[in-house]
Length: 110
Image 1 (tube, rainbow, N blue to C red):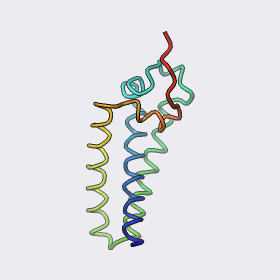
Image 2 (image 1 turned 180 degrees about the vertical axis):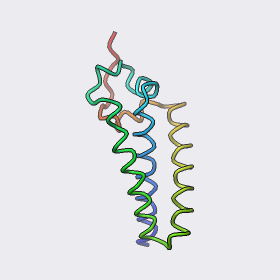
Image 3 (image 1 turned 180 degrees about the horizontal axis):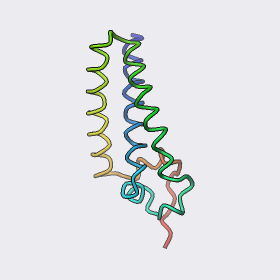
């Protein structure tokens, strides 16, 4: 049961990391926030470090759950699933990712 919880934690870290890496690009930042980058509460390029850290922590959690050969395989699969999920959310409901940008439901400025 603990292993399943840790794998869910790793999946959540993978998703968060992929979201932060996507929001680190100007195109996705504007797609989610609907404001120019200079008006954001946090600089979008500063999201690269939390994104990379989250992906590394996801790998560390996978290594705790299983032996290294299987853990790396599971981690790579989680990265693929997380990237696909982020792409689908960006394509259909990009405002859902505003939470990861540090901004929740702010109206666009004219």
